[in-house]
Amino acid sequence: MARHAATRRPINTPLQKGRKATQRQRILAGMITAANREGYVGANVSAVIEQAGVSRPTFYEYFKDRDACFVASIADVQERLLDLVDAKVQDGPPERAVAGAAEAMVDFATTEPAMARFLMKEALAGGPVALDARDEGIEQTAKLVEATLAAAGPTTAIPDIPIAAVLGAVQRLLATRLRRGERVLAGFQQDVIAWISSYEAPAAAQRWRTPAPAPEPPTSPFLPRTTLRAPAPLPPGRPLLSEEEVAENHRQRIMFATSQVVAERGYTAATISEITRRAGVDSREFYRFFADKQEAFSAIHEIGFQYLMAVTAGAFFGGSDWPERIWEAYRAATQSVQENPTVAHVGFVESYAVGARGIQRVEDSRIAFTIFLQEGYRYDPARKPPSRTALEAIIAAIFEISYRETRGSAEPQTSGLLAPIAHLCLAPFMGVAESNAFIDAKLAETAGAKKNTARQPRRTTQANTGARATRKPGGARAARKPRGK
Image 1 (cartoon, rainbow, N blue to C red):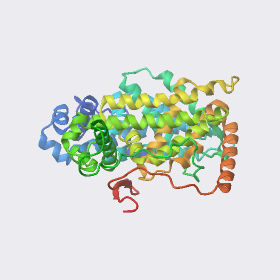
Image 2 (image 1 turned 135 degrees about the vertical axis):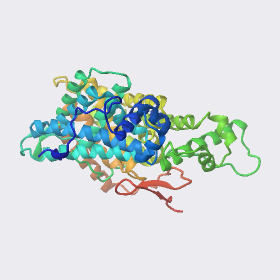
Image 3 (image 1 turned 45 degrees about the vertical axis):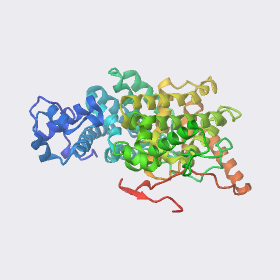
Image 4 (image 1 turned 120 degrees about the vertical axis):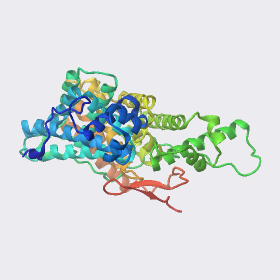
């Protein structure tokens, strides 16, 4: 049965200024236009009412503030996309539900690029409440797809892949193309559908559609001995250090304090005064090293990226063949993310909040990780190779998984998601059956290793000088005190 068909709004009713529409719709349209032009930060009430052609009092008749309007706009656009997905999924057989949802997203981006860009890109910059709305929309779409897949017979081949992560990945890839101004997306759609199809397996043998953290594998030997953390504050009095060493101590403390404050409050709500208080320096020291909050954020983002890339690359070259190298690379990477939660939060959750420069950097960093997939093209020359878009999609799906796990808890369990991440990487190159057999062998091997290995010494953990943020069910955020305090 179609989703709430009786109340469905026509899909071809765009939010456009200039058509006869309610004032609320005009305000929502104004928000979309303002955010697409100026970003979340620039989409203030003045910009919205200018685009909507309404007065400030009229705005406040419908919304209490800018953020309420921003979230309402996300929900409105998401509702339109859900209707389109619903219609597409209902029109096809159950086994095409995932592909149908992806096609609907591409169709929406083609016919309504402004709304699609707002939902798939700008929503990622809107802070915790906007991210809640964005994530809820993806969850609703995934549930719709799952309900359709449930009708598939046990022998029907359907994609064995994390549905929500795949839908989030498709949105991220579309956001990149919309940001570049691409309008012809037919080739992209074909590549994405082929990528999704490469994970097909009998419905009765599905393993990876709803991945949950499993028991953690043994600690990677390629993981650094200590995690990313700020240096200790200098003792009172004249330090026995050079001026350059003192300056570097202050700079690093500011960067790590930035990651902590951003993880707790979100980038937009983080302030320089709170960052300097957390770092134990005054504002003059902050401006000695950084022109503004964005520069401090970009610096810690770059450190996190370089650290994760170095850890992943070091582990990759420790494997005996390509599947082993992928397993070792992501064993180390997922453990590194888990042990550096505030820096991971900067990289996976908040990176879209810093404007065009930050978005370009995070997209560049995603592309950089496709280097570990390139060797897969030589693994089985007889198989039809996945497209270059598929490589980008694999990394985007891993990014989405990491985002969801990092955002969902102050203590993410990413290392327990190694098996589904490995499957995302391997199956398009070696086939689902061989990928599963390899992963089963690795899981059995690591289970045996854990039984025979004595408990390892506790690793040094990231310094945390203030409360960390965790998420309650339903998306609410609450302060969590550091353990041991």
